[in-house]
Amino acid sequence: MNLQELIQLYDMTGRTVVITGGGGILGGEMACALIGCKANVAILDRDRVLAERVVDRIEQTKSDTGRAIAVYADVLERSTLIEAERVIQGEFGRVDALINAAGGNRPTATTSPDLSFFDLPEDALRFVLELNILGTLVPSQIFGKSMAASGDGVILNISSMNAFRPLTRTPAYAAAKAGVSNFTQWLAVHMAQEYSPSIRVNAIAPGFFITEQNRYLLTDRETGELTERGRTIIEHTPVRRFGVPEDLIGTVLWLLSPTSQFVTGIVVPIDGGFSAYSGV
Image (tube, rainbow, N blue to C red; front, side, top):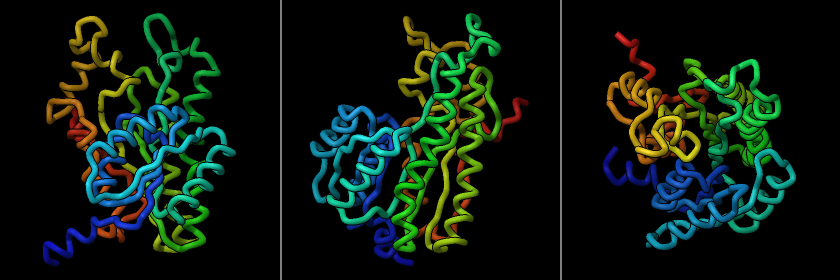
């Protein structure tokens, strides 16, 4: 394969990618990378301001690239996803790939010296479980249906290191991301056997990336220095740093492109070696 043929494999001209939670730090970076590969990108978020901010960022830097639109959708409200799918079909005609980037944790579903496991409120636990599991499953139903009809497409889920090895303090989030990994494998088999072997489903499992949700779990709010938890993570990460959004892009583009056409049902760690480190 020559260089031009390799470049063409990552040319997504005419393809449409939907990103739930696209207004977030990680989803937004994926959107910008895909636009650079000339894809059309629909940025879904329940906070339309965040989604439009990503679109503005893209429009300020793009040249000969794809087109981005901001679309309101709440992954826990099926009706908003159905409406979003209608809007996207009207704008771009079809959906070729879905990235389920919506997810996260809640402080009230996290144990602490002031909040024991036994006192974690049920509504907080339910929200985290539903956001991560149903927030991945339901969009896959809505957008996967058109892939089943066309016989082609890619679904990329966002799991976590929590799915490989439960981390302290986040019981609901760990359980939910384990569910995302399991669902990824199930859906990969189901779509290939029931609809088309050209429909692939995979996941990435980011290690520790500082986002707005975990910033003050890993760094001190006042000083910006690492917390005890943050220091422990760095000590157990062989590359000795937290991830940055750009660290995800190579794997994301690979899993969305034809270069991975024989890859389905896997969960790829992107963790700086955290999952490989035994501590000794």
